[in-house]
Amino acid sequence: MACPVLGPKCSVYYMIISVWGVIMLILMGIFFKVRSPALFEDVAVDEGEWHSQGMDLKYVKSKYDDNALNCWIAAALYALLFVFSFIQQRMNARQTYETS
Image 1: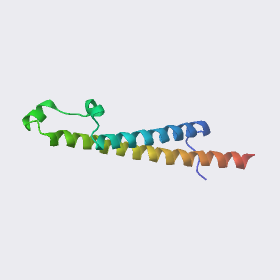
Image 2: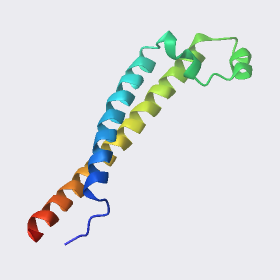
Image 3: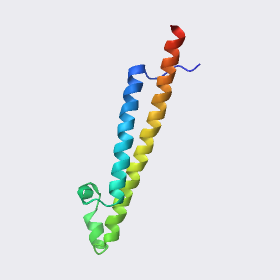
C-alpha cells in the first residue's frame, strides 16, 4: 500500500485552493476570450511589434486568445492538483480508519 505524501489537513487545504483556482481561472479565460476591456492591461502587447504590424486589431485579439488559453491550461493544472489532493485525502482517511 502506498504511503500518503500530504497530511490530512494539507490535502484538504490544497483541495479548497484547487477548487477556487479552477473556478477563477476558467472565468478569467472566458473573460479573455470575450476580450473584456477591463483585462487589457493584463494582455502582453509588445508596442514595437504592434506598431510594425500597422496597429492591427488582429494582433491584440491574438494576445487575448493567448491569455485565455494560458488561463485554461492553468485551470487544468489546478484540476490535476485537486485530483492528487483528493487521492491523498482518501489515503489518509483509509489509513486512519485501519488504525482505529
